[in-house]
Image 1 (cartoon, rainbow, N blue to C red):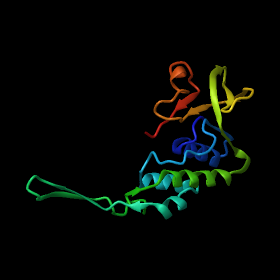
Image 2: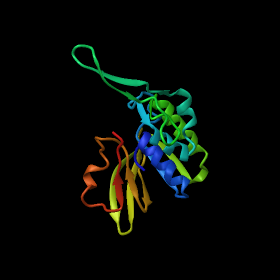
Image 3: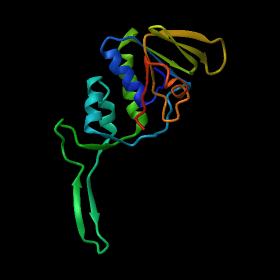
Image 4: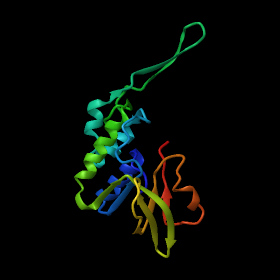
Length: 181
């Protein structure tokens, strides 16, 4: 897994929960402490619940309220009740603080033991398809010797401007690129 944001952390947690061993590479030395996302819906909360990462988020999140549209004369056109309960039992939408989401996911990953290896401060230098495997050359962000990791699959979840995904998009069938934004 390349990328330690919400998409990478959630994917790692989902895979580890299903018994897969996961190595997560994140170029930053520590989790990025500033928000980039501010909303989750009830389906996201349900998915977080499945890996045990929802409690911290919900303790800090705020359900949305009504969303009302008015015309030019100030007359109400319609109201959408974003604060309603959904079929999953959660509110339909929440305002969140992304670092709280990520800390909950990190706590869930820590509880998965040896199935998860978190490598902060590690950057992917190159990716190669080798038969039924993928090799990733990894270097510490602060310098030092590179090492090669071998895996059956690679998921690149390092953002919309992913430096890891685009060079291999057309030729590497055993990896996937994921971005929630």
